[in-house]
Image (cartoon, one colour):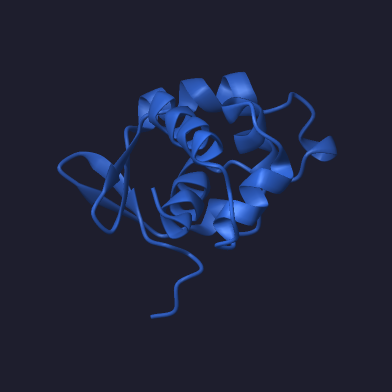
Length: 113
């Protein structure tokens, strides 16, 4: 998994870095460092990838695929009940999705076109 795929997967699931950190059992700073291309332990990256895969994300060559039903179940387990205490990410809700063979694919919202 590459940092841009991490951002894509997080945006597709509408997870904040805190949501991802909780799901993966790593610190939010670890998620932020990895997404910006800084050093991160291999074991931490593996935990992050496992959390995404558990939520229905599949990593492909230049992006990610998300199985929507499984993703919604995982979001319900990770997301806090009080939305006001935990605002949504600016990118995730508006990330462009494309349907391919019944699977949602998201483009990297931070990549310039």
